[in-house]
Length: 162
Image 1: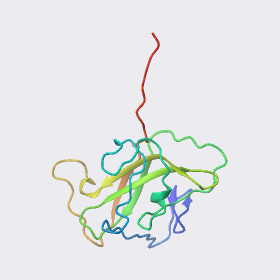
Image 2: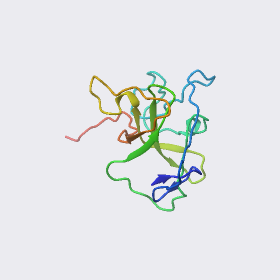
Image 3: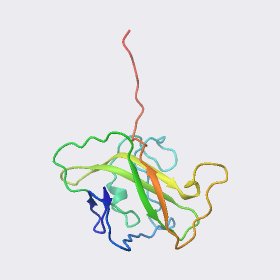
Image 4: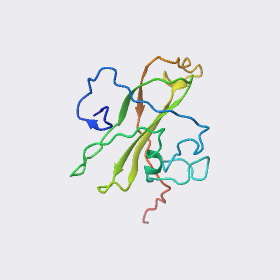
């Protein structure tokens, strides 16, 4: 799947030259940073209010978030194996985080429930060794792979019969 300039998903890579989508990220803005909604982090730690799946629309409706949608699906689509997104990114900052979420949008569009997510902190884009990666340079484009291996989990009590 590939993203198109009209924020839809295409079945094959888009070949549009100079295809650029941008947004302004400003953590000092009145409504703050884009929140983490759900996921497998501890609730009430930092800005995570609950574990597990959660409706992503409050975050998706922000102007500092890009959202892409597929055509309406009329049957279940199994997601088997690794899910990975390749991004070509640039920033005016020396370091930044890129967050990708895969959501299940309800048929009426009223909810977008978190299915999988992942992120890449650019200082670790070349691996997680102690040296890190060189700072980003404004105007340079970096290709990164974001692994969507994080699942929205909640605490489960596992029991077995005796």
